[in-house]
Amino acid sequence: MSEISPPTNTAPVKGLRERKRRETSQRIAETALQLFLTHGYNSTTLDAVAEAAGISRRTFFSYFKSKEDIILFGLEADMAELIADLLKTSPDIPPLDVVRDVMVQRIARHTTEQMTAIDNLMLSSESLLARKQGFYLKQEQAIFSALCEVWRQPERRTALRMVAMVSIGAMRVAIQAWREQTGPRKPAAQFLKEAFDSLRTEL
Image (cartoon, rainbow, N blue to C red; front, side, top):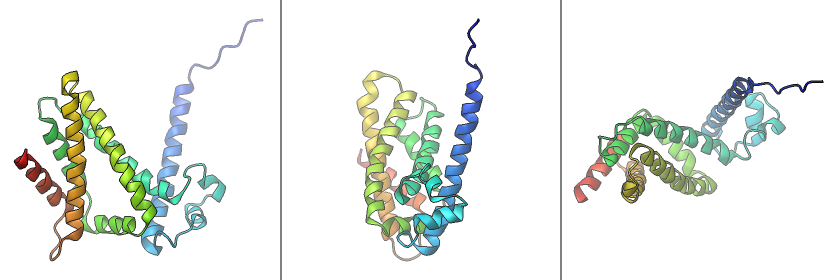
């Protein structure tokens, strides 16, 4: 009796499963974010999120472990898009200019109202702020890895790591300045561009 060979077309099935899981995660995250912004982060329970998303509490935990993970899901998605943009760039452009342009373009897509709402949400929870600080390091490492994919010369790795570090630093300074501004509010993208301009001047 001949052996039955395992199916060889499992990749499309797995790809479809992963896409559906991603879509469900996105739906849960969007539902939760709307509840957070409407009712407050601390006042929104996991049961309320599950009910609004049309799933059970048990199903919720198949996708997220906590409310913090929901927020990080959005941050991870933004970071993935940023990294994808970096990987498309030309190695003929200076790395710092590339990171600046990509970051400024991405942050410019968000309105001041959107930025303010999300920022207020992050400030409302000590646990969220703590997780955000850890995310900065993860973002720095991801940017460094992407830069190493574009500029592959081993001798440039130290400089590329510094580019990743100062870029995240510029973003953090820009967001703080944007948050603390008084008078007519300028967009966060303008603060970020000015932060990179100041960095280049000092360098």
